[in-house]
Image (tube, rainbow, N blue to C red; front, side, top):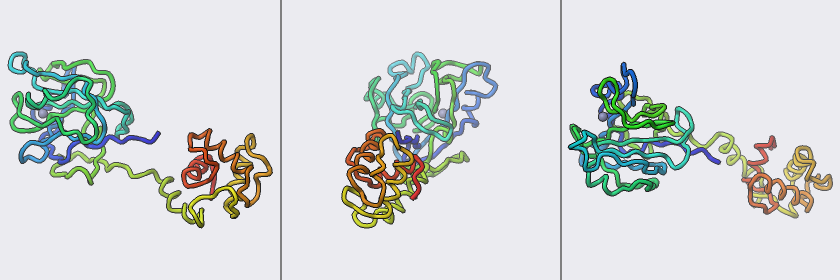
Length: 284
Ligand SMILES: [Zn+2]
């Protein structure tokens, strides 16, 4: 399975309060019990902006509707990534909480709903004691203990591990316009893995004419593949497969290889099969 990278889920990055500034400090500093590490994302700052995820997230919990004035809770939503995500900190399910959406906005989502990539429902707001339209955001890994008040009287989304924004998300500069990263140094989302890149650049040279080898072809690279198959997978490669001619014996052993490695079993060797062979040590 390919890695799914956690991408910063807003089109504008305008972090107006870090986890170690202002009223976020008591969320964790000198807390004797519960903590989280929130940051404020004010997005575009003209009009209101959406949470627009680049990964699928599921709604775990909706907090605060119709209760904010009486219980002191502010409107909030707790999300969980649908897939395990690779973050700069590590790979796991990523939990995100967003606070301060207006009531009407939050009423549009239901518990269990999946917010697919690009969904625009959750709109920043000024619910609670927010000073202006923004999202108060936390990102977390591991077990959730609750929205708990800590020894500094701050209400915290208390998880096993609270992540800083640049630990939780990679930045995709093609997607997010950075206005203010508040001195968090974000990593750019990793490009395709290196060995894939080299295999695609070399692919054309390796397959001279039509871009793959199949039954009936003759080429020195066919001989290399046959050699490799015979040495590495003798259990299902016949000696008669050896040589520069792509015959039925080689075809059969490639089919078996494709079957065992989850590829389409056409018995031909193209870029996908070649990339897989390389994973088993094949050198061009
Ligand atoms: Zn905040």
